[in-house]
Image (cartoon, rainbow, N blue to C red; front, side, top):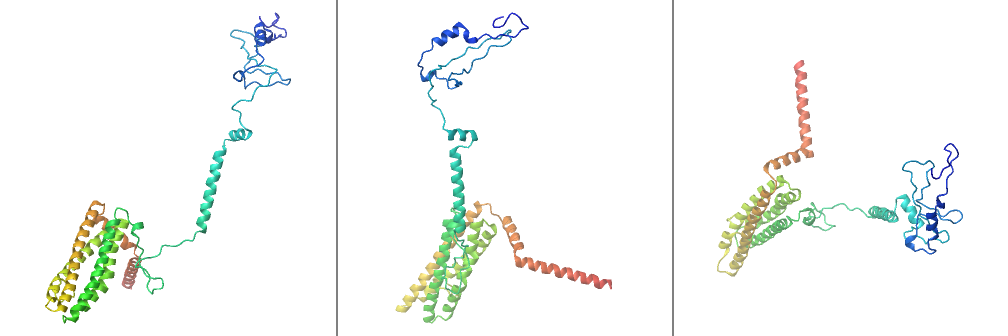
Length: 353
């Protein structure tokens, strides 16, 4: 048996695998200078500077079937190998071993610094609560704004245009009421009666705030919150506004409005009569324009309402929810329930005796 003594029970004697003639010829034929392509980065230096061989398999101690020797690859022993091109720096080796790259650490540190800076800015930034801004009054005024209104912030961009048109229409109504006061004052001077000045003044004082609260604010809340209940309130009140504006445009005598009939009766041959007639006719035309604007916007908003998911059933549900959440309604209901219970308990106690 090759590589062992004849005595199978004796100490095995391993022959030197490098004493093979083929291996000796390979060693002697290796050139002194080798290129970088022949460099084996997996070779290790021995204690005397000799090159250890990776991949060489020692011959088996006990031979048998299939026991073969693997060829060995040798490296020169008298020349230092150049460093590999892919060699890492010590810091990169540590980062690779820890599994935390420098870039990831830098990103995490930057994100933490940004969060800390944002928190610091938020703590240092003063908080200003939202304040009412309508009607726009001076700070030193005895009255303060009652509502917060900002169409660009609170209203969807699809409904901002029509809501601005409604707001401008409300302002137009207010201006017409002021012109109506002027026309009524001129008619009172011409001898038509003091009612032509008193009633227009009353209309301006009442209709200006009530029109804002009763049909513009419900429309604003309807577009802001998609509220069916506010849509219903707007349609009901605004339809009433349309009818009243139409009557004012007609100008029935004695109603205190400068309508068409009143304007026609104010004309006469004198200069003052012509002047008063022109003023009242201008007010009547403004009332007609306001009536047309009311009808146009009522139609547009009703079309938007029909295309939305608003309905009468939803309005009833919203009304019930809002009505029950009202603090005054809850207190009144609790007082009624308590009084009812007390009455019943009193009747029961009296019936026992």
